[in-house]
Image (cartoon, rainbow over all chains, first blue to last red; front, side, top):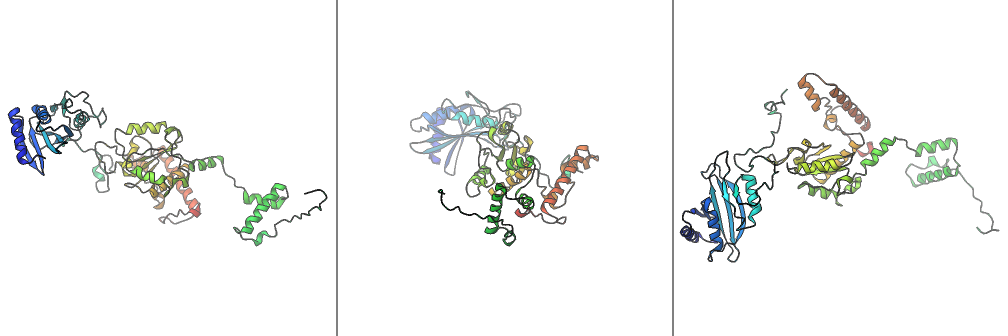
Length: 176
Length: 265
């Protein structure tokens, strides 16, 4: 586990190799995280994977997050693991919301980590984040005819109103 | 018996004189009935005794009732678990609760061989077409039990992914509440289904609280202000069902607790 100083060293080395790639770092609960430019996420992942002193070769998880009130709305998290040293590092690609008519886009890392294929499909399914270069980007858990991105924070929860005697008169079609 | 032996004299006595002495249910009484049945086969019973024997030992019914009685007591459930309620359904099949007591222990792995399906858990919108197809593949007559809050109403999953009640896409005969229902509750629901198959469905709280006219069709008529012919017929059927049910369970006052003891049927 890189500590806070180790995280800054890693961020500095990435900054030397790919200027502007690392936007920010944070370290809390003994977890190191790099916040990176979404256009350079593949460069950062490749650097962490191939650099001899790092060698984070295992993608433990890939998931999406919606931070709706925050400014870069979406985040795609890559949880990387070095299995020799048992060290973990998190890379978060901060994606801006392109508006209601477009979907945020990001480079796919399937070529580098084949396990990401299904996980990127899941992120696409629930958050509508398009991964450029994915071999088979379609919905994986919801029905393929489903419309909408249900895990976004502005998506309605769904369900139906439960009718009790105290709110019965407010439900259309049920009043006497 | 070898030839030349003295023939054994057999003296036959009818047991009619003994019959009143023996209490019904006692070993003597059973023995007397056995010997009378033997006399009947030998042709030794006549007139009054023959009539009495037939009255005691023959039950008349209709073929329809016998068929329904047999069908309801040899149901084949489908092996189909949807979610966590399936654990309770599995427990119901096991020896502790034992649905074999009611003749439904033969779980079938094919819908073609199954008589009823238990929807044991939430039905997601992706699973709903599959469930519907399985139900369509079952042969008539077929029944469906919706087990638990999720498959009856959506339950705690009031969200985008779960169908809010399985009767939105297929007919359901019995709804069992609970989250999850205990195996006893599932057995109780299955007993209700058996009564429904035998054309004697329970009217439940409507009968207990004498609540005729609270059905949904009656309510829609109140809203529309004009009862339809279909709802009049349904009203008559419901009224008749409640009357039959009251007759079967004995007289009781309105609002009184329903007595459904084993001895009354």
